[in-house]
Image 1: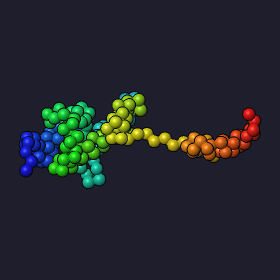
Image 2 (image 1 turned 90 degrees about the vertical axis):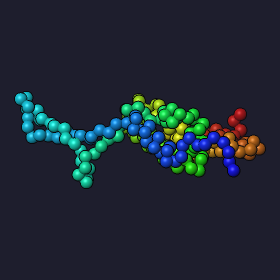
Image 3 (image 1 turned 90 degrees about the horizontal axis):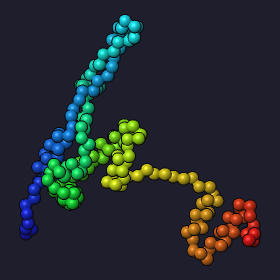
Image 4 (image 1 turned 60 degrees about the horizontal axis):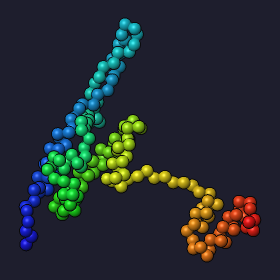
Length: 179
């Protein structure tokens, strides 16, 4: 029988506390768009009015806006725990699904910000994605045949390198015996 301090949160209580955290840092606003009224002002400019955006079901579209960026440290402060506890909960059989869904919600917010923010204002988002989610920018370089052989030469045993280097030298126009 396990003994120790009783858990502060069950999955249901953690879910509710996380909902309270997100509610405390967000607001819901109605999406609107400018629509031509068909009128013109005294200078001949088109007069627009803002109207609610409707989805395909005819419902007004709502935008969830984070007034304060959501983050693990904010969640931990709200829950009264430290980061190590949050990490342990990610492995806890009872809590890991709640923690996983929260992690996905934070990842979705970060990716949305990365896509929609001005280019120069994404460094923090990129760092967060790299450090906390293991995501990074992938760069591929197309190597020509000669460069590929050079890299191959660096990874083969020293005893085989001489023949490869002679072949590369001949391809670059120099003789193997030039010096």
